[in-house]
Length: 127
Image 1 (cartoon, rainbow, N blue to C red):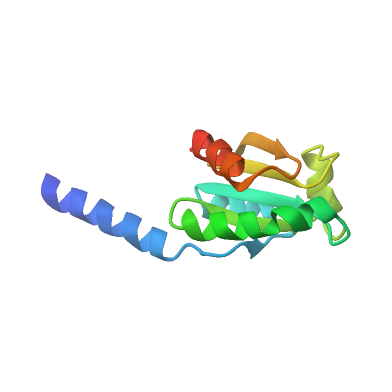
Image 2: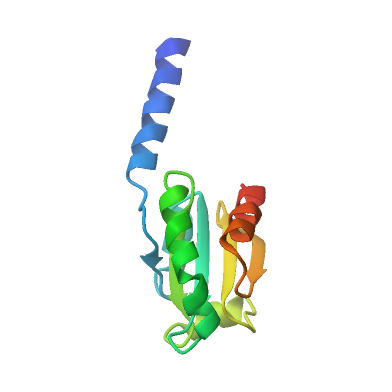
């Protein structure tokens, strides 16, 4: 395979991977958390609870960013009441908390109900 074919193949694989990435937030649990981090290069996990009003306030922003950043970032939602192990592992003391992972490692933590523009900026800086 010559250089041009190799580059073409790499670009094709990248486009196929991006096309298969979800455009809406996916549900993440304690049991599939590590698999999710391995499957995607950049994952933003929204740690939330059903009773949390600030969590509900940022939900539309998370959904909009999942659509806007599709192909580059996968957004996940992890309910801390149903999945306490992951929240404890990452020492999440307040919700909503968004954890940004790159290649399986945490690179950024965003705490509280912040404007969508701020979320997008913080996530973009982590890329």
